[in-house]
Image 1 (cartoon, rainbow over the protein chains, first blue to last red):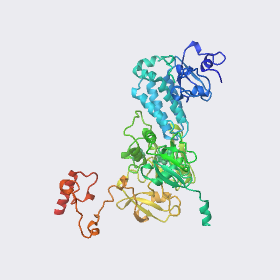
Image 2: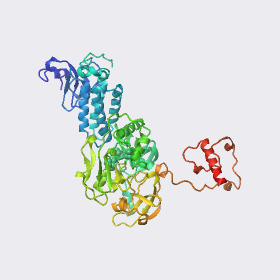
Image 3: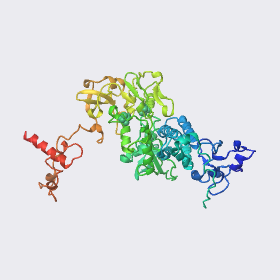
Image 4: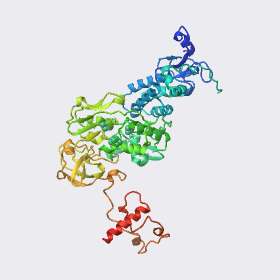
Length: 195
Length: 383
Ligand code: SF4
Ligand code: SF4
Ligand code: FES
């Protein structure tokens, strides 16, 4: 696969771009457990290189500034999508899928879902964001099977890259119910950090 | 013959846990090796139960860090592993309480286990011998960060002797394995999945198997309780005594929990890890329902003597006070000479007054406590 992520999304040969000419906000280059990336980190790596559709390039930067290639899915978010709501949807999915054998996943996925629902409804608290971060870190790696990791990663990645959107949901609770945080600065060019 | 068997015995494996080494047979798990060392090093285990095949791996309280895989392959394991389900390798190095990662993960698991737990210890029959109480006290953090409604279930009667209080269940699956392996017919299992999974008998079928009572003993919390004992007493007011009787169904070796001469409860004998002990013939000492629920008269039993209770256990409190003062032997071994004190601390301190009987003081003893006890004792002596 030698095409770039940009070409994959926008070329007519592949996905044909985003409907109604909307702008790209974020993308999950895999199934739902794969860490989400904002547009600026998706199209170019932190080093400023073009990101390609292959394992190495998508994983460039680790989970800090990169992601991983998933199992064939590809979920693209346009500027109208809400990351908080979307993270809640994923958390809900994983809570539903948890088999309930081991305690971190059984209890942790439900807890994350409840917190995210509260945030999405505009009833969250600032401390909820750090709490979510802590819960996912207690689930990740401590469960029997990788479903725990899969439930933890999307939450971690959303907070890592979209923390201001979460904060906006709390500080502008009423507005967040009627309007979307939108594209915000997620497509802005990043400063290239020299390696 | 003996020679041959010896030769075939595989070499022991050396495993180092928190810088303490032990040699164990191949096939031993990290948890079992740690139990040989004992003390703080031993990870807590809420779901693993030695007599039950296939148990363990569920609760994740026994997570440890493997910092060196083995002599042959010294790479560390990237994730924390469940020590109850991980076999040792020769030269393995494990970190339990010396790893902050492990301590954090354990505190996390405790928080998860308590998330939906009612913590109704004041009205819970298990209180005082509850593994979850010990676990949260020893490995948890104070307080919870959970602000939502807790999950609750209805209470169910499983047959005439057992009550299931699912709200308190930590889903360790021990009772499921017991019902599967000890009784001959399994009608007890886990229904549903995720955080609404529950222990159940299909269509609330009563469990009339002779050995089903053992699920009460394996349950680490107060989810399965003995209906003949419910709300009768607190375990720390009862005195455990080992006893036996001739039983044609089971080994008949039990612990009686008595108050005065009344037998309030009968359980199997458990070891220091809370697991049912083996009898002399090497078999697990499961007991039958008749011994457990129906023999509540001292005359039914031959009493062997007090059960050994761990010193820190709340069950041991109140009972075994020192009645005889220890004999002073210093003068004897010193050829009649009394010990000479460099500083007579009794003159300058309220505490340590030799005229006060230490066994009369419970809990921390301050100067005030000493003085009060002394007054009481003097009064008693004058009368
Ligand atoms: S099961 Fe243990 S922790 Fe839970 S209420 Fe009963 S005594 Fe308390
Ligand atoms: S009822 Fe008790 S033994 Fe059974 S799974 Fe729940 S906590 Fe474990
Ligand atoms: S005792 Fe090892 S996971 Fe429960």
